[in-house]
Length: 52
Image (cartoon, rainbow, N blue to C red; front, side):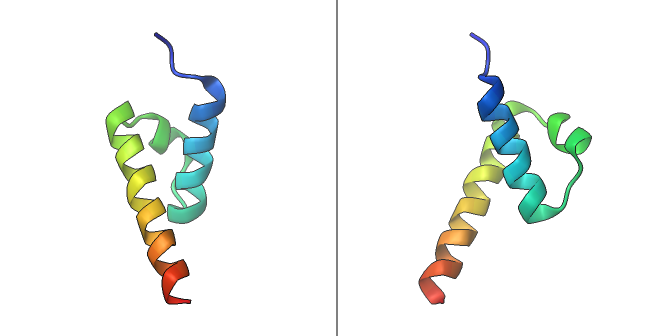
């Protein structure tokens, strides 16, 4: 099974936007690590929204 290209672009954009990491650095990550960062960022964003 291949990972949807659109989904990959979304993950890269999300991590790059929040952590200011480069595309190559993000794409070099294992899939599970990239997904974990996406989940962690989403949690940070949700907590920040709840506080604001």
